[in-house]
Structure formats: C-alpha cells, structure tokens
Amino acid sequence: MLGMAHQLWQRARTLLPMQGFSFDRPLVVFQSDDWGRVGLRDREGLEELRTAGLNLGEQPYDFYTLETADDVGALSQLLKRHRDATGRPACIGMNFLSGNLDFAKMAGENFHRIHLRALADGLPEKWQRPGLFEAYREGVDAGVLWPALHGHSHFCQSAVQREIEKQTERASLITTLWKAGTPYIHWRMPWIGYEYWDPELAEDERFLPSEVQTTAIGAAVRHFVSFFSTLPTSACAPGYRANDDTHKAWAHFGVRVAQNGPGSSRPPHLDGYGLLHLYRAISFEPATSAELSVEASVNAASACFARGVPAVVSIHSINFHSTVKDFRSRTLDLVDQFLTALESKHGDLLYLHDGDIYDLVQSGRYATDSKDVSVGVSKRTFTPRRAGKS
Ligand SMILES: [Zn+2]
Image 1: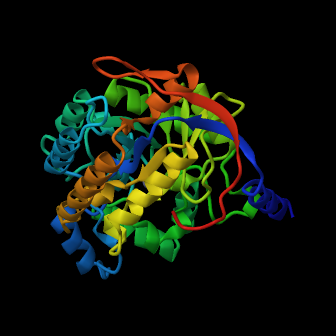
Image 2 (image 1 turned 180 degrees about the vertical axis):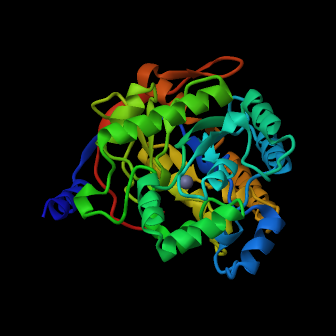
Image 3 (image 1 turned 60 degrees about the horizontal axis):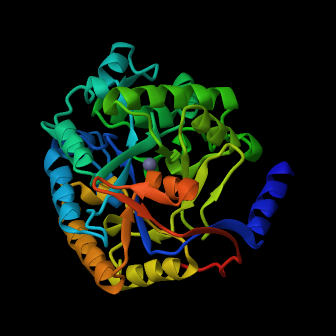
C-alpha cells in the first residue's frame, strides 16, 4: 500500500508547479556515467565467455569493456577543440566507480564473498590499461574532464551475496563472469539491482537501510579521494536509484550536487540538505541508439534554454569504448556535430560542469581558469511540461 501511495505521490508531484532556478544564458552540461568500471575483459574475456556458453553480442552492453588511454585522449582532444562564448573548452562530467571487484582475492575464497579493490590500487587482475590513469588526469588538468562520484560496486552487493549463499543458477552465471574478469552484464541479470537498491525485495523495502548506504558511500568517497586527491562535488547513484537516505549521506560526505535521471523535466532546485538537484534532459547515447538525431538533440537543448534551465546531456562511458566494438568513432563524430551546431546556433553558449552550476546558484557566478563569469539566476515557479520525449 505504502509503495502505491508513494508512486501516486511521485506521479502527482511531476504535475504540480514547482520552484526552481532559472538562468539567463544557454548552459550546457554533460553528465557521463560508469567511468573506471571494468566490463567485458576485451577479446580475451569475450572468447572465455563464449566458450563458457554465453551468446555475447545480443545487446550493445555485451560489448561494454573499459575505456583505454586512447579513448580518453581522443575525447579530450575533441572537447579542447570546442569553445564556448568565454573561450573555455567543452567539458564532460565523468561519474566514476572508485572501486572494482577484486577478482584475485575472490578466487582465493572460491568466489563465496565479494571484495572490492580501490581504483587507486589499480585495475583488477588480468586487466591492462597502460596510460589510462594518466589520460584521466591530463583531461582533468586541461579542464575538459570533470570527475564526480557514481559509486563503488554499481550492483547491490546484498542481492548478489544472497544468491551466492543459496548457490542458485543465478550465482553460477555471475561466477562464470567473475572467472573471466567481468563483474556483471546488467541486462542479463537485472536481479543484481543497483548499489543502493535491491530489486528482489518488497517495493517499499528496496532501498538499502540508511546506515548501509552511508557506509557504502563513505567507502566510495574515500577511494575517490585517494584517486583524485579531491572530494567529489557531484554524485549520481547507479541506475539513478537514490532516495532521501542517499542524499543525506552524499551531503554528509561533502557532495553538493545530486544528479537525477531523465524523464521528469524538473528545473534545478535545492533540497533540505542543501544539495542542488539537476535533471538530465537529453539522452545522447549513440552506442544504444542507432537513430540518434543531432538535429533533435540541438532542438531539445534549445527548448531547455527557452525554459531557462541548463541542457543537461546524458552520455554513458560505453559510447567511447573501442576495444571489442568501436563505439567511439561514431560517438566522437556525433558529439562534434552536436557541439558545432550548438555553438553556431547559440553564440552566448556556456559549457559548464555541475560544480559551476552550484556556484551560480550560490553566488551568480563561477570561476574559469582566466576569469569569473556572471550569469543571471532567478528563482521562479515552473509549470510542468507535458510528458514527452526530449
Ligand atoms: Zn552506471
């Protein structure tokens, strides 16, 4: 009953006018998930899993691997070529998993328990990515990549641990993947859920208890700090599954911006913890969308500007992967076209990251390498748009 009441309230809420922040310049923000998270272990992993009986290739995410130094370098080069009205380069907010499964340690216990390895301690056993960590840092130093927090394991550890203990068929499938150095392929096993959300429980019990979330977020933040030497300012929950307890824990660990998934068309607003909520408005995912239209994406961005809200663009890391399937070439080409069209249509366009939007809301300005930039920010009531694709 509670679950249904909550759903009704959520639906009703999207129809009510709401207070939010409006900006008097066209603002473009990219939010990109899953960086640093290993998947299929390249060709070798593909062969191993095919031998084990998996029919890989049915969905794009079967070929989710891990970015290489070249992938990250090519993205950085593209972003550096695009400049906004202040001369600042385009920037992508990258949401990192600050840990991966420690397959070697888990193998030592016959895969009966889950162990994580901090990204700062290197990639899991058998994973090779020469120069990748340097490529991240080079992009961050150049101001074109902006790291933020995604999480630690991405999947719900208690959901997986439960199957392992019962030695179910599900457990044997995920163990097969682990032996090949792959944590999971979500679409093949949606029961693994998301880091703070267990799909197998009753509807109103799916979010993990507050203290469990706080511990997980604390560990993820600690590993983020040891990798980037800075606290994350912005966070996006795996699968966008965040509740009030998630927000409270993020705020506790210094996060200032909560990223939310697409579909609601809500304006940026502050919550009771002081977190600024941003909502993705444009899905730019060439890897999973054969029919992606640059023109439609530009129009969707223009519609955001007309409402006074930032065009928040979602683009997952898979779009830049290249080792088993070349997702990267088409993506870079489309992003190039998208940015070129935005720049020519909106001469006063600004490329920002989540932290800049937070600064704008606080003070009406944000700092670039060379100067402070002021933007008119006002609080106003937004009437909801009719539900539809954007
Ligand atoms: Zn994710």
